[in-house]
Image 1: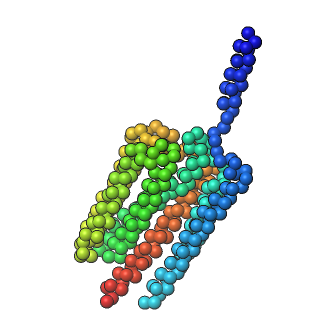
Image 2: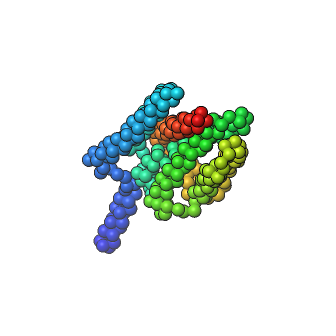
Image 3: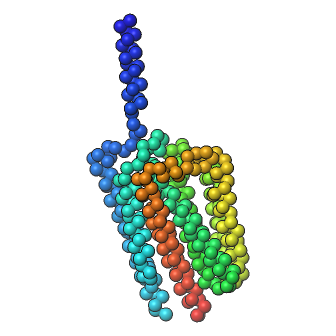
Length: 67
Length: 221
């Protein structure tokens, strides 16, 4: 009887725990701030691409004006 | 730099996407988990492709009406840049699918239809490279481009919606609207699309200007 009650309790707790469990997300990366490293790297890449496009654009304008 | 304001806008929007795309909160969904953020980067590739192909279509029509080779140059460079974005969209989609659908190629109807569309546009490039005479090349490729553009509607907007698909918004799967309900995601998703469309257009205009310089040199000599 006692054993059965314990088993039921464990089962109820397990079910409750699984229903409260959240979808796994990168929360650790967010809490320790490592996500900012990713953002900085990507922002750097985009800044480089943007600067290169500006450079190409100005160069093209210069060539167009030559004639 | 001619008309620089939209290029600055483009830089601001894409930079904002890179930052907010990783830091803004997203809904917690099973299977997708954090990869839901790919929506900010994968989908804009396709939006940009469609806009660039539309511009190419407009310039093809303009060429057919005017027989001005400059319009043909614009049409061909818009198409080339559109193809670049379609390749990026396809690769990012396969990378995303590999981890959420279980394989890079799932024979998903939208994947298949997009692959067909890409082959149609690859054929445009092959068609052009196969002809020496500029006038003939321009005329035939403009007519071909009108048909290629007409294929976008059934291949991307009709067929994938008629059958079951893994893509959201197709065959009874929840649409964009499901994510759109999350107003936080909408605040990143739409600026991302605008930013990438402007970036694609900028690259295309650079290509056009380069091709025009080349064309002018050849005709002067």
